[in-house]
Amino acid sequence: MHNEHVDILIIGAGPAGLRCAEVLGNSGLSVLILEKNKVVGPKVCAGGVTGLAPEEDLPGDDAVRFYKHHVFVNGTERVISLKHPIAMIDRHTLGDFQLNRLKRFRNARVHTDNKVISVNHEYVITKSGGKIYFRHLVGADGAISLVRRYLGLKNKFYIGMQYITPKTYARCCWVVQPRVLRSGYGWIFPHKKFTSVGVYFNPKLVPHATAKEFLRLILQRYSLDHPEAKLETAPINCMYSGVKFKNIFLAGEAAGLVSAASGEGIAYALTSGEDIGRHILTPDYNFEKTYRLLQYKQRQEMALKVLDSAPIVLQDIMFMIFVKLLTVERLRNYFEGVG
Ligand SMILES: Cc1cc2nc3c(=O)[nH]c(=O)nc-3n(C[C@H](O)[C@H](O)[C@H](O)COP(=O)(O)OP(=O)(O)OC[C@H]3O[C@@H](n4cnc5c(N)ncnc54)[C@H](O)[C@@H]3O)c2cc1C
Image (tube, rainbow, N blue to C red; front, side, top):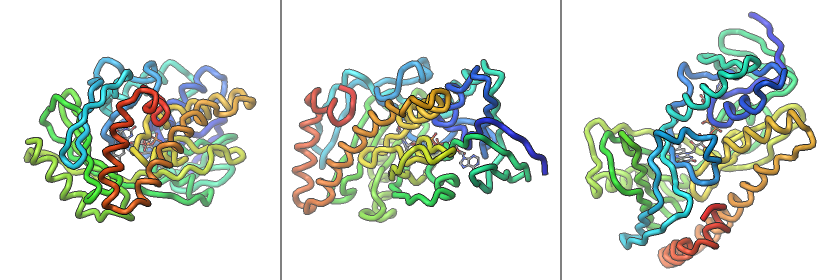
């Protein structure tokens, strides 16, 4: 077993962990990211990034951008035009982009194929038997976070299920059918060389089998079915309980920083990773950007609560009204932070 000491240890090379390390680049502090996977980037994710994420934090060239969104509520279509498009970004590309930016800094290293199996307030132990001491630990280890579990925090899981089909598609679509998916939704997010077709749902309200069948019907209806389409499922943790716990920080999904209403988490991960880095460098900095995003998460979740507590017969009409409201730029800004 080899021992090592670092100033900042980050667990997880997702958008949150990599962004945090980048902010700490050139600080003179030793920064180490431990990533369990061999490759940085790939993650079960549709890759839709809203204007909540700063453009400069994203690989612009490869993204497909959608200003127009086709929303189907029980088959009735409404088109929402956004001022800030949603960019479809392949997670592999995002990982490469962030990793390349990190290579500029000599004080930050990424160790892949290096899973952390145990955590406490002083050190972590890796699968290969390494013991790594830290001054600050950043848990950026996603939905099933070991660091979060060590801190004794609860989770609230939603589920994202998607087919990645090699077919491409011209329109970005959202499919809502409250009687089947309750407040969840289906999506078609076209990328340059593939399309993510998925469903997002609350497993306490919707059985897995129902969601899977809904997804199969979307594939059929939009002719996106393909023999090589690959089904992927992953939990999404939406329970936010704070970012700072003495010398331990939680970033991104490990912190529950995902909107329960939409499942959006990439912008939250980038922002919270950045804020934690800034706070470590300047302790007076108080996570302002993360708190701004939390405001939208809370507003969206308030609307979700109202929807979920309404009788199912009313949900159809409430969804229609809500989608109509979202065509108004000012209201979209209020709920989503971008017009
Ligand atoms: C089906 C689906 C679709 C989604 N679509 C979207 C979308 O379109 N837009 C959007 O904004 N969000 C989407 N999300 C949510 C989004 O994927 C996450 O919120 C986002 O990836 C969180 O980033 P993160 O850096 O916090 O964690 P992650 O991206 O999960 O990264 C965590 C990293 O930590 C590593 N790790 C975990 N445990 C350990 C360990 N013990 N030791 C070492 N390394 C470890 C993992 O391998 C991983 O690389 C979707 C989620 C799902 C499931």
